[in-house]
Length: 332
Image (cartoon, rainbow, N blue to C red; front, side, top):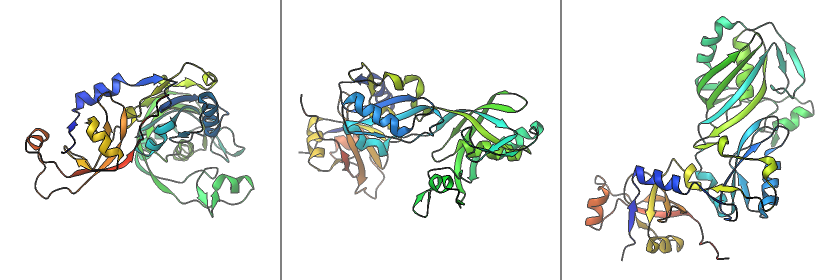
C-alpha cells in the first residue's frame, strides 16, 4: 500500500508557516534568531546559546563580522541538520560609509592607510548603478577567505601580502537614506558572500576618494528578520525565549504534507510517491513540524500529472527519495 502524500497549496503552506512560527525554548529543536552586539563574534553567540539552552547541538547559518551588529541565525538540536536548506537570501544590511579615510580592514576597526578628498557626489548614481547587479568584487585582505591553506586575515595580521582573487557577487539594490559631506547611510540587499566593506571601499574609489565601512547591521536574511531576534544579553539559562520553526526559512523548497504512514516510510529510508513540481521538497506533518527533506527521482518522460488526477490514478511524478530525515523526537 502506498503512503499518502498531499501537496500543501501556497496558502496552506503560508498558514502552516505562520501558525507554527515559534515554539517555547524548552522545545529543543528550531531556529534561534540573535541580535548580535558589536564586539562579539559569531562563535561567541553560538557559545552563549549552548550555555543558555544547555545543549552542544548548536550551529549557525553564517557569520557576521565582530564589529557588525544584527541578525545571526542559529540552529538548535535536530534543526542543525536542516541548515543547508535554510534560504538566507537576500541578505539586507544597513551601513554607514565614511569617505576621505581608507583603512587596512576596510572598516572602522582598521588602521587608516589612505586619505582622500570629499567624494564627488555628482557621480553617486552612476557609481551605485555600477555596483548593482553581478559585481566583480575583490574581498578585503582581512577576510575569512582561504589563502595557501589559512585564513586571509591571519596572513594580513602578520603583515604578509595577501593575494586574493576577485569573485562575482550579487548586489540587488542600494537605498540611500541620508547623506552628509563625508558620509552616506544606505540599506543594501545582496547575495551571500558579498562584503559590504568592499562595497564601501569601491564606492569611495568610484567617487574619486577613499572610504571605509563605519558601521554595519544585518537586518534580515531571507525570510528571517532581526525584529524577531532576541538580544545577546537575554541568552541566559532557563530564560523564556521562543524558537522559530525551520519551515519559515526553507522558502526555496515546496512544502509537502505527509501522513503518519509516509513519515514512518521516510524514517526507514524508503521512497514515497511524488506530486507537484520541484526537484526537492520539505516534508511536514499535519501540524507543520518539519520531518525532513527529499529529492525527486525516477521522473517519468511524459508530462507530469496534476496532483488530484495523479492521486485518483494512484500514480505520481516520480518518487521522493529521503535526503535528510529527522529522527523522531524522544519523549521526555
